[in-house]
Image (cartoon, rainbow over all chains, first blue to last red; front, side, top):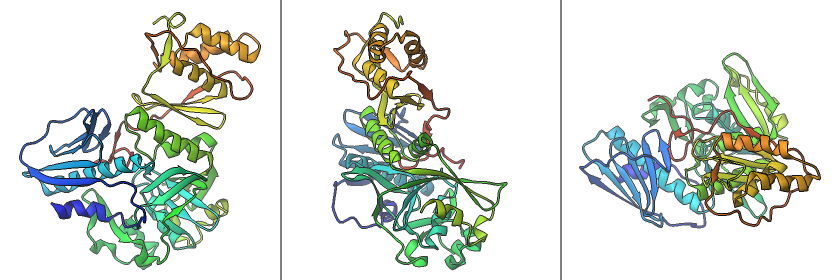
Length: 301
Length: 131
């Protein structure tokens, strides 16, 4: 059970020198299933979260639960023992994600489901839904002169000098099929799957593209990524100012709590003001052309 | 609801943030978000404190120097139609809202696609994939 809890935590391998908040998580087994919740705080695919005067309570589809203290710095995860390994692993991952994202918000950060790459003069936040190509684009840029802050997990906040982006994990989730474009990654199919629901494998950035990891940056650009099944190459067009904010809003979880939502919305709105946005359309087999990113890189200078 | 006579306020689960030339509103119940221009944002701030439609028209007319009844009514129709306002039991407070910049007719744009109600996880707001 502890190994299952450690796995999602070990993914966060970027070292932070200051401890902003301390959170305690206890894990136990139980036999009885918790009742399903309405999800007045969050509705997720495999868990609902309610907020109340005693803190947050999450219940998964399998009946496991995660309950916080009123101050949100202590959590009790209770895993139903007579359930499948798939359910146990995914429930623990979901609960750990809830604990961490809650703590980051309390520390003033907005957890953001996005990638980011940076050069000397630019830091671009890469936005797209799950499985839309963020990680592949990050890998393609890491092979060139770009440094990487992450492929799907970042933190954003407004610092004294404006928006800041912080890295959380240097691991990347890549599909074994990307080997045809990035031969240096070798055969990823021998590695364990990143989750039960995806073919992707978790790889370490440093193994293939050394010294490309970057811990923090000041975002200057936003890239809204989409695959094109018809087109070829990489096409880039500017985004309208409000589309930048709209895109950014779709990359963060906004709980149904006015105070928290206000804070997250304010971070995203202020960040969006500082970003030049582009829609990036990636055509079929675009990465087979080693120069396919030149049109994009021209816009980022 | 009799909007012209009642004291109305912005629902507490409608949150807002200032952006260039206005603000963005997010309805946490329905997940739709709206962009308003600077004049619209000034009107929203009046409703944040509680006000009546007639008072809003009067204040906006004083900001612009001419009658703004129609422009304000059209704006408020959207707020009422989308149930962003609620009747307040208390009397409106004294307002200290200032218009930022020059008066222009207020606009409100509702964005077509709401944010997702059900998301993949506490970190990933994407629509869950079929498992």
